[in-house]
Structure formats: C-alpha cells, structure tokens
Image (cartoon, rainbow over all chains, first blue to last red; front, side, top):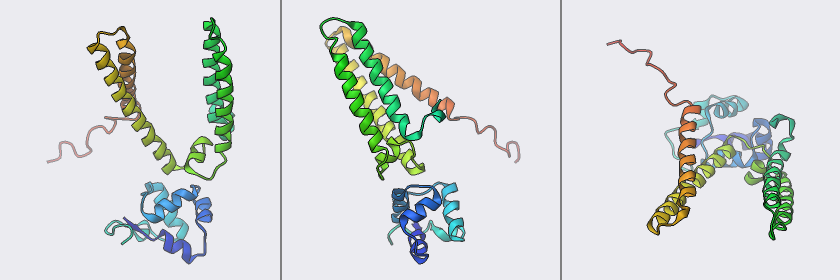
Length: 68
Length: 142
C-alpha cells in the first residue's frame, strides 16, 4: 500500500522525530510507515490524516504497492 | 499495581522479583550448592540494570524494555512471543516423544508444558473474544 506520509512530512518541513512526537508513536514506527513496511491501525491512520488535514484515502492508496 | 510503578522500572522490577525468587529457591534447597543463590542475585542485578538502561534507548528494544511501546512495537513483541511459544511447543513435543521412545521417567514435565501452552491458547481465545460477534443483523432476511 502506497502512502503520502513522507511527502506530506517533508512538505511541511518536519523531521521524523517531530512527526512521531505529534502522533505519540516512535520514530521507528514513522520510518516503517513511510517505507510501507508497516500498515498503521485505523485509529493511527486517522490520526495521521487529521494531522496533515487530509482524508485517510488521500494519505493511503490501497491500489499502489509501496515504493512504486 | 502496574500503574504505581514508573513504566521504565516495570520490566526491571519484574525481572528482579523473578530472579530473587529463583535465588530464594536455591537457598531454601540448601546443600552444598547454596552459593548458586548468590550467583542468581548477581545475575539478576546485572540483568535488571541493563534492562533499565536499555529502557532509555531510542530503539524498538528500548521502547519494549522501557514499557513505552507504540502499536507497531507491541505488535512486534506479540509476534515474537507467539514465535517463542510455537518453538517451546515444538521443543516440548520433541522432548516428550524422545522421553517416551527411550522409556525415560522425565516425560511428564514436557507434557505439563504442552498442557500449559494448550490451556493458554484456549484461555486466549476465550479472553480475546472468539465467538463474541453474535448473530448476523440480517439473519432471517431473505
């Protein structure tokens, strides 16, 4: 599943650690989500989308493989 | 009780408690090997201190040791424990089979371990809600 977390984070000038702190998760989890190795739970996916002011289906695209 | 202990101290505290119980068991046993209890206390202290120090590390292991894991790290821990349990079950089965094959008297601890694993699995199914979904809302609607 492709996601736009990295794109949105970089676009707002945030570090992975800052995003992790805002979402109350670890920096390692942000790295895993950005690389597509970890699919967040629904509550965390909503938290990410809300943090960036987007919808979940804008942030996460189930039709694309991660890294494509 | 868990909430009264600082998160970073939880794992070291449980580790220290288990190690102290082990040491007391050697003391109660008595005999010429009583000094093993001293080794157990030393090993427990070293382990508890290293766990406490690891709890500050900015790693997955550190988050787990410091009881501040997020959802992915909890999932990692859960999957690792599941793997460990599967390995324990396989090892117990191999031990039980080998003990039976050589007609050894030490077959029953393996059976106890297998029984505990099986009971734990059933307890997990019951505790975590298998068959709680109930009847379908649309049951009976053609």
